[in-house]
Structures are given as C-alpha cells and as structure tokens.
Image 1 (cartoon, rainbow, N blue to C red):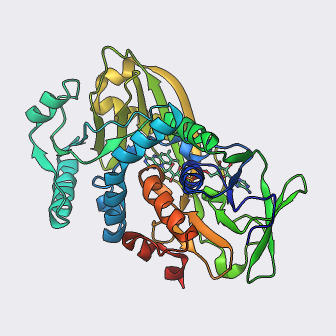
Image 2 (image 1 turned 120 degrees about the vertical axis):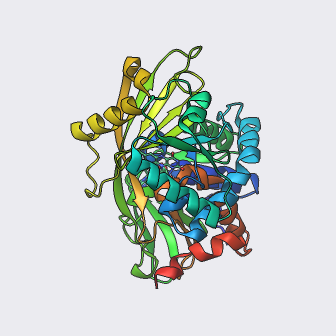
Length: 378
Ligand SMILES: Cc1cc2nc3c(=O)[nH]c(=O)nc-3n(C[C@H](O)[C@H](O)[C@H](O)COP(=O)(O)OP(=O)(O)OC[C@H]3O[C@@H](n4cnc5c(N)ncnc54)[C@H](O)[C@@H]3O)c2cc1C
C-alpha cells in the first residue's frame, strides 16, 4: 500500500548499488526516491572499475565467483542500456586482463592461481615473459611470466555513475540530497524514513544501500541490521597521452607478494590500486600506502614513472564476514538490503539491480543470489 504523494520505494544511499536499483526499479514502473547527501561520491567514485570475477576468484568463495560470473555476463547489455537511457557511455572495455609475476616466488603464486582457475573451470592461459611483453611491450623485462584472462573487463566507474544518475532522472527517479537519520517503525515493520532536516518519507518499501555505512543507519531493528564494516582502500589516478598509452589492457601483478593493478582508460588515465586496511571509518590517504603502490606499479611498468600524478584518494569498501554482498529480504516488513559488496560492487551492480527489482515485484531472488541473503549470518 502506497500512501498518496509519496514514493513506492525509498533507497538509502546513491552509490553504484543504490543508483542501479533506482534506475531499474523506475524502469519497472515503481516510483523511486534516492536519499544521499553526496550521491556517487562514496566507494563507487574511487573504484578502479574492474569487472574481475576470474582474477578475484582466488580471494573469494566459489559461490561468490559464480555470482560475479553471472553479473559479468550481464554487463554488455547493462552498459548498452544505461547508455541508451542516459546518452552517457560507461566505456565498457572487453580487452581482458593480464596477470603477471615479478619474481620467482610471485611466479609460483601465479601458477597456483592458474590451478585455482582450472579447478573452477575458468578459462585463463599461461604466458611466458616474452609472450607477456608481446601483449604489453612496456612491461619490465624482469617479469617472470603471466596469465591472460580474457573474461575480466573494465568500465569507467565515474562515467557509469553519471550515466546511472542520468538514466534515473529520465525515469523520474527523485534525488534527495539528504542523509537518512533513522528508519521508523515498531521493530517488525518500517513505516517511515527520517531525513536530516526532520522530514519523514513514508514509502511502502525501503532499500538500505548505504555502502560501508549500512550498519550505522539509525532505527534498523537488530534482526535486520547488516553486518557491514568499512575496509579502507587507497588508490591513485595518473594521466598520460591518450594516443600513446602505456598499457593496452588491465595489468594485475604480484610484486614480492604484494598485489597491485594498473587499469588504463581510453583517455590516457591509468588507475593504480589499491590498499586494503581495516581502520574503522578513517578515510585519509596514507603516504606509505601510496609510495608502496606507486613503487610496485613502476617496478612492473617502468614508463608509469613518466605519467602525471593527478589524484590520490581513499574510500571505504562495505565488507562483510564472508566478503559476499547481502541482498534482498529481511525479517522486517518493508525493509530490503543491497549492501556489503566489498571489492566487487561495480561488477555486481547489474545482478544486484535485477535481484532487488525481482523482490520488489514480489518474485523470488534469482537463483545465484539466493545464497546471499541476510539469513546466512543467522
Ligand atoms: C580503492 C577501491 C577500489 C575498488 N575497485 C573496484 C573494482 O575495480 N571493481 C569493483 O567491482 N569494485 C571495486 N571496489 C568496490 C566498490 O567500489 C564497492 O563495492 C561499491 O562502490 C559499493 O557501492 P555502494 O553503492 O554500496 O557504496 P558507495 O559507493 O560507498 O555508496 C554508498 C552511499 O551511501 C551514502 N550514505 C551513507 N550513509 C547514508 C545515510 N545515512 N543516508 C543517505 N545516504 C547515505 C553515501 O553518501 C554513499 O554515496 C573498489 C573499492 C575501493 C575503495
């Protein structure tokens, strides 16, 4: 039942997750309001935009790899549709990813990664140092070998956020630049959303999609509170000539046991990331983290030293106890969750939006998403 004059759905948080759900839900005919004091400037703003179900497979569980693979397959259609709906190209690049090893220990670790890929039936291919440099001529001659992963892609996450805002706007999604102070209700159902100026919205359904802050929003009954914690990530943006790029595809590397990635954009930008640190809600940029990332990036691709340093940033990933997202229903009527996407929120945005719209329509979650409800945490 929708009280007259208000939205069917209020989404708390306008990152890639909230904005994707808002656009898809509005397309499906719901009246949608997004509340966020600073939409599109959380973790989604700084992310590298990798769509990496395969190269992330070693660090996540098999069910999460399957979820990522399904979402990756949705990306070509999702990108084309958000561009058609907004006029903004999110710059999906399907030229694959090269993972390289810097020394012999890194090479052993990479051989293990390849074995994990094979055990999971994922297609990736071992390359000699010469074959690596044939693909990426500016790689350091010290590189000891690599793995080509055709199925790991990238989008320009900042262009994507602009496209999602535009697509939502064109479907009459209302954007309220206000923080949600608390949800109101009697503990069994939500009947209001209180904003920081005192206004109370009365939607039929609330979707909590506030990223790393999802566990902090007031008034969420304990039975529905998502176990989300902030995980700091520091990341660097460099710029170079678009017509003479240092890299042709995403390169991930293991350098003396440390991970670094370099994600080249068509405009000459190269995104270098990223640290992982549990430090509460601190989101400052540490000199040591930047020094280590830049040092490792230059070790792998020496020409990176000549690029311009444009930006160093930190944001908070929404981490969960098992690194998987939390999607769909809660024990509280009128409250849905779409949070906890940790390292893979850009990758998982299409599938998350599909799943949440299914639940809004009263349908069940897509089969791959069923293992990712709040219920699994007991
Ligand atoms: C350095 C780094 C690199 C990354 N690289 C990748 C990558 O390559 N590929 C990938 O798939 N993922 C990547 N990620 C992860 C990805 O960025 C996140 O999983 C994703 O952005 C989460 O999206 P979100 O919408 O849940 O959160 P956010 O983008 O953080 O959005 C949450 C929003 O909620 C709002 N909010 C908070 N509290 C309230 C409130 N009380 N009321 C209203 N609004 C509120 C905030 O203002 C914010 O805009 C990376 C993350 C980091 C930090």
